[in-house]
Image (cartoon, rainbow, N blue to C red; front, side):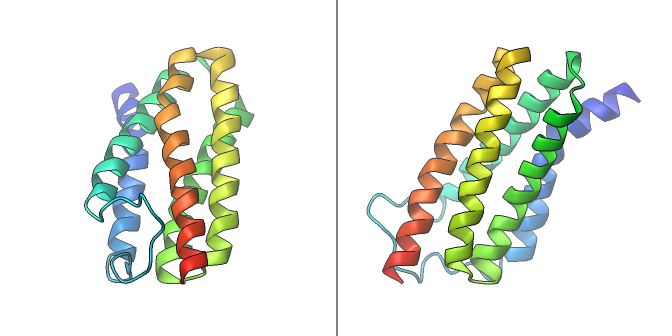
Amino acid sequence: MKNIKNFFRIFFPLIIGGIVGVIIKNHIDYSLVEKPPFSPPKLAFPIAWSILYLLIGISYYLYRKNNNDKQTIKIYYIGLFFNALWSIIFFVLKLRLTSIFWIIALLLLTIVLFINYKKQNKISAYLLIPYILWLTYATYINIGVYILN
């Protein structure tokens, strides 16, 4: 049973990301919209997100090995919810302005998660740094797409 829990903790973000990918795949218009300078090619996204989801899962797994703070756990799952819904808001619903506020909320949740993790497990916190950097970059792209389109 413990191995199933550990597997779930590590791979849950990747599974959610995969499900969202299936939901949005026929709605992705990234190649059709004007993008701000320094936007990555479309191919970069599935690679980056696969790595990030794995880091998010490992980070959570390491945190949960010795910690059971309900507020931190709640922030983690709320963050995953915000992450999953951002793609639907941006690509499926095409609510670009709403998606800016949504991704900023996600970034703030992730920073709070980083701070909470750092108090208990520095490695868990540091594994979130690439995610925070990518969310910052994605916020820039999201704002650019909104302004340019």
